[in-house]
Amino acid sequence: MSNSNPNDTKLEQQRSESATAALKGQTENSHIEDSEAAADRIADNVKNAKKDK
Image (cartoon, rainbow, N blue to C red):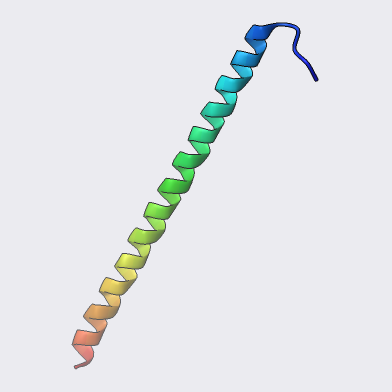
């Protein structure tokens, strides 16, 4: 599909870059949340291990 208006191409490129940035942000936020949850579980495990001694 070709665009007869070159401005449409620029708009589509901006949309693509915006979508890519949004997905990257979501992925990074998800990774941070997963890492924080894992850190919380490790901390809980350490506390439980100390209580068991």
